[in-house]
Image 1 (cartoon, rainbow, N blue to C red):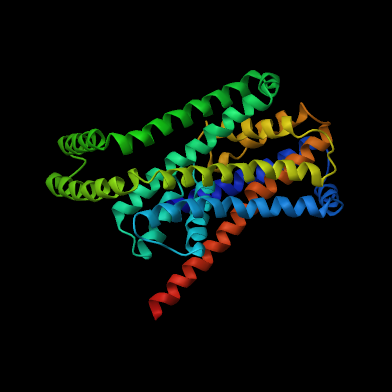
Image 2: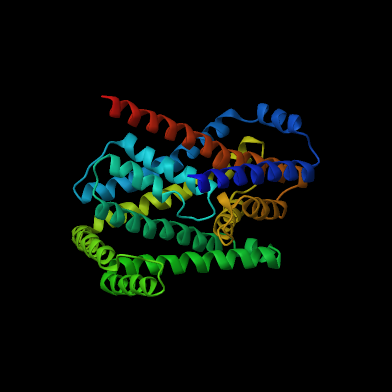
Length: 340
């Protein structure tokens, strides 16, 4: 808990510094930016807000579909809570899996077994990487010139991000297809930790791992043949990534941008991929850097900063606020349930 609190403080500092730096570089004041939002097209802006909520919603649907296939159906609002926990803690921790403990916590409170939760997270993890790799490819196909216009450093970020996601995707598939290999490696690792005196009660831990792996194997065997579930999980993650990228398009339109959106969409695809190559909470700073450099290749300096700040504000900062409020409501609901 202390570690989470520390990263929350670090994230807040990084966010404040990034916002200040972007405003400083843009040459405009906060009041000027707020005025541009006040004068924006409210229809396009509303679509951006809807996309922000949809980002949380689609991951929740993906998680619900997987646990339902395993025999543990949950209500839509629970899926939204699981996703909000993932979104919030992923944004304030340096690891892309920082939100998974929150999903585990709420799923366990809903009576879902640990092995089912593990299988659900692995399957959703694979689908998550499918969504990101999909839009990495889409970015290249839509406008390869956008990638070529980036600086060498940005290109390195984007390529590194793509390689990382591809590697994680392969590891996720191995967790499904080569379970026994992963199990044997885990057992050997526990034995190694015991030899160097970092782990006590080796046999007890290994027996617990054997039990979890048996349950996990059973759960994976249940979902392995459900091609529809796999398709839906991947589709929900693709839609989640699409609405996140679409926030930029709607922000651009809301602020009065009238140019073609193909290259702008491609730019946001690359920014999303490249922002993950450095483990900074919420990719704060890296994402902003990739976005603003890409936008400045497509539009005027001042307008590029306005689009970046509005887009990032909706897709990241507002999303964190909504997720945080959802988590508070979820925790208060658990408190009331305990009292009853």
